[in-house]
Image 1 (cartoon, rainbow, N blue to C red):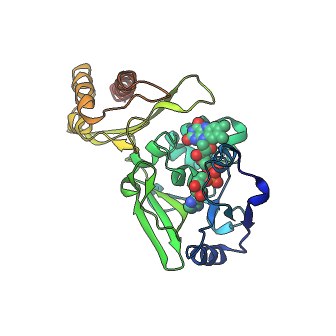
Image 2 (image 1 turned 30 degrees about the vertical axis):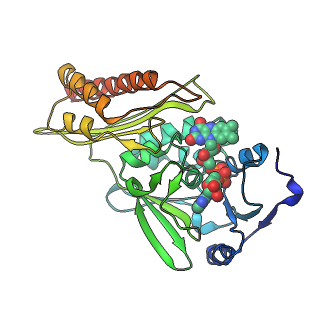
Image 3 (image 1 turned 180 degrees about the horizontal axis):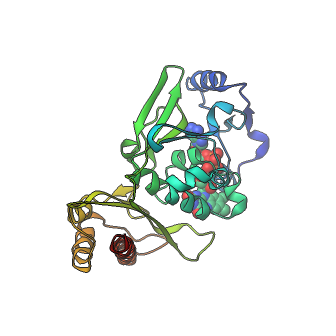
Length: 295
Ligand SMILES: Cc1cc2nc3c(=O)[nH]c(=O)nc-3n(C[C@H](O)[C@H](O)[C@H](O)COP(=O)(O)OP(=O)(O)OC[C@H]3O[C@@H](n4cnc5c(N)ncnc54)[C@H](O)[C@@H]3O)c2cc1C
């Protein structure tokens, strides 16, 4: 049953310090639910599955906004940056084309105008479109509470299905990204029921850099194939120190079957997902082969 709006209350903090205090104080009774763009939360309210009735509106927190370029091609992205904001940032698009490709795939434009990167991370759906990109780029997530701030490696952020290594009194404030090695091949592809406005059956972000002795930097990150976003270690190992070729691609595809074991669910069947994941891997390796044959 839909949650009655009259039962809900919203706190509007003055600044981040105030927000963290309100959040910490609320943990003793009913925890305030942080609200960013609200695109997931309103779905839960509509479905009657949202647990809390008290919300902490993050919308006015300037400390959680902005895209800042750092040293050696790194970037820090405020958690409140929405996917439309990210698409508009030319330097970010240059350094992290897969993030921008993912930003274009989140729902429709109306959703992209509100949906935030921090919300996508905190919502912790294994189908979240930005998550494989963040995993492939070894992102770090800044979290803050009244107790202080810390960085969580994205690879250690999810401890199980929709479980985050973030305490109830912590907010996600920013995401740090380091540049991929210069000349690396970036790849992002989401496969859903149709091209627009669908949740993924498989979503994949790949990064590969070829050094003198073959591939020396490989990241293969997958969404919608496990309880959390995952990398495929055996497949990456099959590619390291190799030059992309048909034979290597065949070996990698075989290794992928040992890495991921997607399940059947309402959106797709496990066997189909595995087949699609193999096709995406092959497509990525073909594009790497073409690029490095040309260069
Ligand atoms: C029609 C529709 C289509 C969609 N399509 C896609 C899609 O194609 N791909 C996709 O990935 N997602 C999709 N979504 C899901 C959603 O838009 C994204 O997950 C979005 O990024 C969530 O961000 P938000 O700011 O709206 O989060 P909110 O709804 O405000 O919050 C989501 C969760 O994150 C928590 N949270 C938010 N910000 C923070 C923070 N800074 N610190 C701690 N906790 C926080 C909230 O408490 C809540 O639990 C879709 C949603 C709708 C309604």
